[in-house]
Length: 349
Ligand code: SAM
Ligand code: DTB
Ligand code: SF4
Image 1 (cartoon, rainbow, N blue to C red):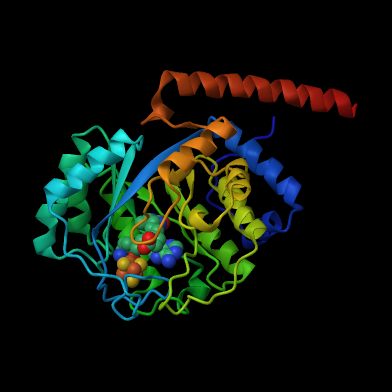
Image 2: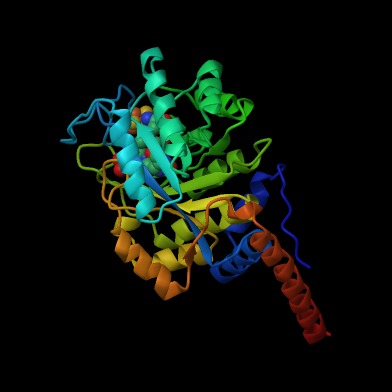
């Protein structure tokens, strides 16, 4: 039986070789790896909420929220805790199982911590999984958020170490790795991925996935964002990435981190449904759901539900990986795989 084990010793040439596979071979491997760890017809559904918008001091070249670029975005102060909880209730009612709160900060200030802690507690009490992305965290901040019950912290590496300096100059790659280490140390789950379509080379996509896959523990959640080009940002006129190269990135992420959720993240608004279906086939099993990402549009919720229906996909229930049903499915799948191996073996002999 073909086995996709959890490895943390991927070499550059191995990951390059995956990217270089004929498309159909890569898709077959990715789908095989996917079926070893997940129900292939379930997709996790998260909703984003911008709890503090715009006027960010950082210079991330892709970001509409940086104060350095004139993107016409209206800045908004930290949202009241009650309002965040109202938004979370709406997200839950429309079918999301995780609520991701994002702030346009370099890092949270001491005075902000009590509010974000109360947001975590309030959202969690609704029976939703919680995720936050607030910029860099020191050890104490990570401990405080973990203590409040925060399930996931999102902090992206964004791209390869080599290309990183072309995109961001106000914080280093090492700063990001330090935050991720603080999040792990505090016992939270890690959500970490990147953006493609920023003018990087294929080898930068290799470099990003190599960094993620060779972490001591794989991030539980790996968002692969397609650049959303926003007028006024330095990357507004970047050339489109070939959609097949986007799908290849998802497929390789699935193979090198087979037990992680890979999120078909930003960029779906300009992606046709066939490309999204192909992303699911490549092993993407999480999406952002709801009309808005943080500041830019996302497909309408009912359009996504229609797409799920047409593809026979169901939203993944909260904590599905621990349920008896998921275990039964994994065992059944192993039996099907064993049967298939027997079939291929017999056919070849
Ligand atoms: N300010 C915090 C930080 O950067 O750590 C948290 C919020 S920030 C908006 C979260 C992530 O959104 C970024 O790391 C980046 O990967 C993604 N992102 C931001 N703007 C994007 C865009 N235009 N297209 C695709 N992804 C984007
Ligand atoms: C992630 O990787 N993508 C999300 C989330 N983590 C915070 C953000 C996408 C933002 C897209 C641009 C915007 O809407 O402002
Ligand atoms: Fe600020 Fe985050 Fe946007 Fe960078 S990605 S400018 S840190 S909000």
